[in-house]
Each structure stands twice: as C-alpha cells, then as structure tokens.
Length: 64
Image (cartoon, rainbow, N blue to C red):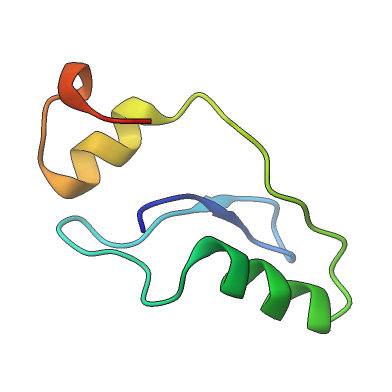
C-alpha cells in the first residue's frame, strides 16, 4: 500500500512516510477523492525506485 497520491491543491505527488504505508487501499483512497469532486484516476507511473526506498528494499527487488 505504498503508492503516490496527487495533491488536488498543488499537483505534487505525495507518498507515505519512509517505513510506512497508506492505511487505505488505492481504490478506497480514489473513491474518497472522487467524493470530494476530484476527477482522479489510477495510472501507472515510473516510481518503483521511490516506492522501494519508502519500504526499505532495493529497487531491483521491487515487485510492481
């Protein structure tokens, strides 16, 4: 449950803190954003290295 969420205010990609994860699944977070009127969709982005860094593993061993 480590993935980016784009801020509706700044457009910045937000990740959970290092060693942590989001408490809700991607679909639940997406539903919540849509309830606020945000027109969000799930999309693949090339961020495996950043996600691996957050959970403390080598990016080569990260499972997409």
